[in-house]
Image (tube, rainbow, N blue to C red; front, top):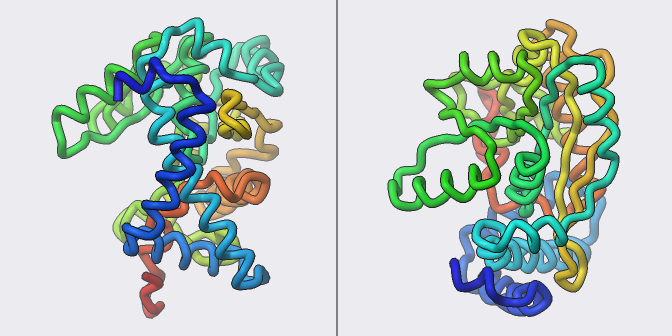
Amino acid sequence: MRILSLMPLPFLYYVGGLFGDVLRVCVPSRRHIASRNLQLCFPNHSALEHKLLLRRNFRNTARMFLLSGFVWWGTKKAFDQSITFKNEHYLANANNKGRGVILLAPHFVAMEVAGMYVSSRYPSVSIYQNNRNKVLDKLMLQARSRFGGKMFERKSDLKSLIRSIRDGMICYYLPDQDPGPRRAVFAPFFNVPTATWPVLGRMARMTRAVVLPCTARILEGGKGFEVILDPPLEDFPTGDTQLDSETMNRAIEQCVRRLPDQYFWVHKRFKTRPPGSEAIY
């Protein structure tokens, strides 16, 4: 992966597109997951529209895999020059009010880009979950924190995380993965009852932080990346776990509708079902 940091971004973009076509054919299990997700979330799309969106999504997923070499090991100067940052004033407004910020970051293929770029410009923290592969775990931690961001393990460092946000640091938080049945709140996501982590509202309430949706995308032709901040969530948190989970999922859905071909559709987002519901995958 490190050698990829030396290659031009347009070249990686082009090769990644070809690689994505190969993966779509050769990894039927992930193709099935992504296809089911798209059918559920875009029921009004035709079969052809689903097929084309699936193809673009696999291409972008593979492109980001190759571009990760540049993101993780490229020079800071080159990395900074590859980023266009939109609506940064939302961060400044929160800082001027003396409040911490939680960036609500859905799992787009370029999610690493936004977190690393923000950590290169602001004191920031993020949460990670230990990987079974210890070598990969170490490499990812080193890469994600190389611009100064602090990483806290999900299960053991939550108190330190809360304290950091209260102190005015920016938290990069990716909540949109299946939490399993024990911790889930079911909230609509594209009109599908979806097992949802009920944590964001609690974090915002405990820290008085502003919550800003944050997305990152690969620019066409490998011309770099764009990081986008949306306006703060309004009337959030309410203190009602169900309402706050629904608000969070609506915000994520709005981001996904804007950029559907770069969302992480290969994840079993709807794996955990409400009692009595049929399995989706």
